[in-house]
Length: 273
Image 1 (spheres, one colour):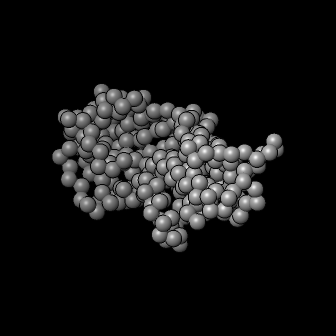
Image 2 (image 1 turned 60 degrees about the vertical axis):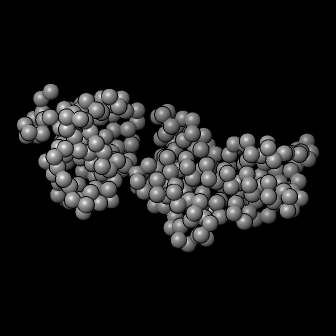
Image 3 (image 1 turned 90 degrees about the vertical axis):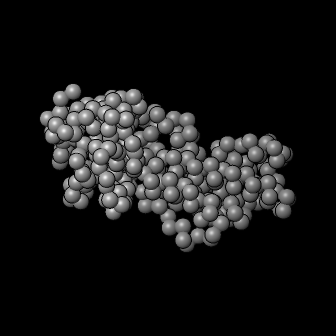
């Protein structure tokens, strides 16, 4: 392999990075001159499915201005685009530098004869989430959703959304079982009342739960709130669980996901009542 944009002493780290990315299923291009609008040409551009990672092989972590400029370029793209730095395995980045790249969602790898060692995973920089502040919610809501929010802040927005949906589903099942006993809930269909066992409720998907909540006779505010939240979330819950690798489904999910976290927080608070 021949590299034109890095000094010769970094070629070994670059080759190791290319080989590891290829092993991980990425299609790899070296110094891809066909890229449009890039402020700096990446050493490696790796694509897998809907995800592209631009990797710069450097002797040390670049200046803050360079990090911000290329990060802004990635954030302006329409599909999952990530930014990573690869340093030689002999590099010893300071804790301050590591915190800086983590804060910006930039990946950081050390690379040598033994391959790539990840210090910080690259985040999808096109998903600039503004998550609800959990501090304004009761402690029980914080405990339930805190791990999902932490996953999102590590740059794994889809995984965080999936995890938060699992939390909400579980709490919605417990809510309806609890309130059916407390309030003697009746479930009405067009054909009349129906009986549902606890075991059946525990197996219900989000879509099935949304239907069941919608069948509650004389619903209260929390019942209606959960009905609406579950109905709104379900199409993208299906996408993230079963169609995440489908380009069209992923595009729809990425458009909707920002508002979903606010709905989830309200839904979890209602489900804990």
